[in-house]
Amino acid sequence: MSYFLHNKVRFGFIIDKNSFIRVSLSSTAIGLTGVDMGKSVLVVNGPNLNMLGTREPEIYGKLTLADIQAACEERAKVRGLELAFMQSNHEGELVSAIQEALGTHDGIIINAAAYTHTSVAIHDALKAVGLPTVEIHISNTHAREEFRHHSFIAPIAKGIICGFGIDSYLLAIDALDNIFQQRN
Ligand code: CA2
Image 1: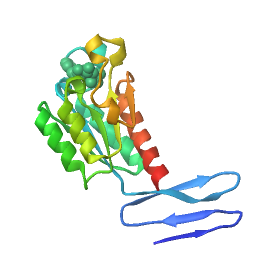
Image 2 (image 1 turned 120 degrees about the vertical axis):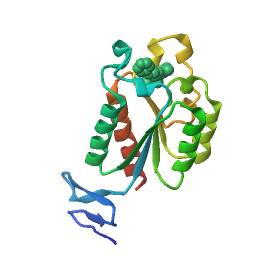
Image 3 (image 1 turned 180 degrees about the vertical axis):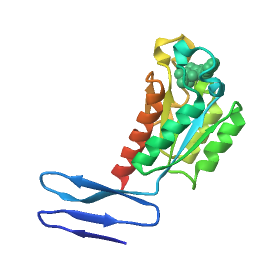
């Protein structure tokens, strides 16, 4: 169901069973706009990220992957998004998860960890599904060893967020949601 009234006050209303309604106020418009039509985000985590919080806290912080997942779920809820979160140490499982995102999710956030710097297979899978993708890293990979400066994911990503710790994940959710809003 949808309708719009145009006058001094702009009022837009679109809803389905999964809709999240935003109320916007501006000097020229008061109304319900920018409805998320039940968009869903898949967060993909690569090898060794299941070790977060147990080793190298000076680089990766003290939070566990479960802490990051909980924070992502909270941010997605605020944004009115569905969120699925997965981690694997196996390249093929990451490729399969990306392939299965097609028709299930509307965008991908990926911290491919070490596979960022090596995996043509993950590059090809992301390119094949064609979903808007944000590449993220907890650490600033460009301030680290040379081998972390190259990414096979970067060429197919909408953008890259690195160096902000857990905020890299949360900023990526915001960025994807903004992309969804612009497409509506
Ligand atoms: O900064 C990131 O998010 C990285 O993707 C993390 C990867 C690294 O290979 C990338 O260059 C940058 C490594 C993840 C390993 O995580 C660990 C966590 C705790 C203890 C050991 C490894």
